[in-house]
Length: 152
Image (cartoon, rainbow, N blue to C red; front, side, top):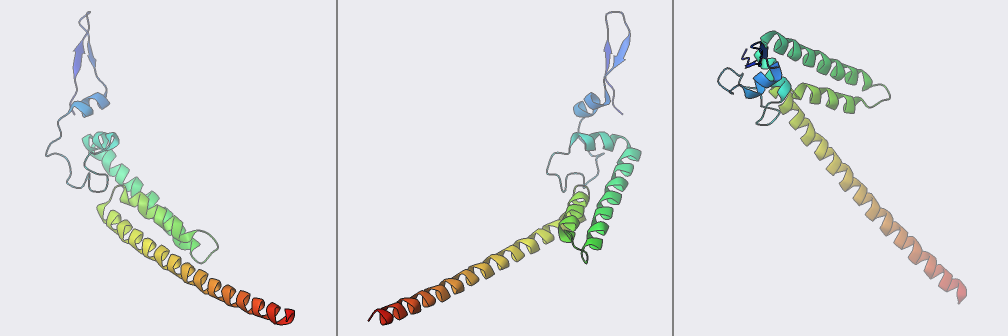
């Protein structure tokens, strides 16, 4: 771990915090390849800190996996029950995608599916509205014709 030290007037050394050391440390080849796969080009401060302590990084990844898979499992349980099962599953995959590139790819596929389903529902609603509008127009025309015939 890189530490910076500061000399005070009285000659005592004071080390900066780990955050300062991590922020000022050069980004190099010692970082894992997949750290920025799902978070963009710049890793977050927490990931910079965790990468300096491998045990914490492993614990963090295990924690993300446990929480993510727990949420996904709860969503699967909600599928046959009344509740937002698919929304909970999406949330669990989103949590997993924060750390694992494979989950980010699964999330991208799920987003495409969700967008396709929304487009299908919108097209179906538009067809229904057109059909109702045509039926309403026919009924109004028939009522007008009947009222004219009754008036004559």
